[in-house]
Image (cartoon, rainbow, N blue to C red; front, side):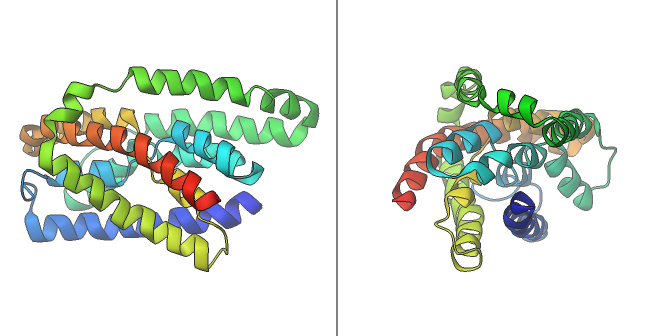
Length: 239
């Protein structure tokens, strides 16, 4: 109940803003975008969330309720989210397998956690070690050369990401939920796997294929940027 109350509001606000801004971006700037920032780069980066970094942040600066939201946040991190939003712009076939593959473990975890408390307690004790392994995997998957290729468009997108995502959720959490805002900063993290989404989407949407490589670089810069700034912000506001 506490997880749903806290995160349904934050995620709902974020999704509404992401959909509105994505549609507005394409309406005003088209698929090409501006200053090298294409629509596919904008949509993919804006909708990205890194569950692993989220978990690391809320474990250090949040509370057990935040940690319990990991499964829900993993659904938000699915490549299906930017695909659905782009589908509003240009209807296309959507592969739901990534979403299903995330949903099934989540459902099984909920069932096990609520039917066998002893097993749930045993599994939760492994959380610190899982975070270390996940963090290692995320770091190994970041290509710094790709991040450097993003240049000015990547920096602009990183600013947009914090301006639109972090600020809206932070204000909601601080003034409506009456909390410090750690959950919002944890959600304001970009996943490395999102760098592959533009290429995946271009396979069924040839019109964006020309923008996919640069979009991947912009996402990668966002991954590096949020991996640095989000933990620092969370530490600052948690005091």
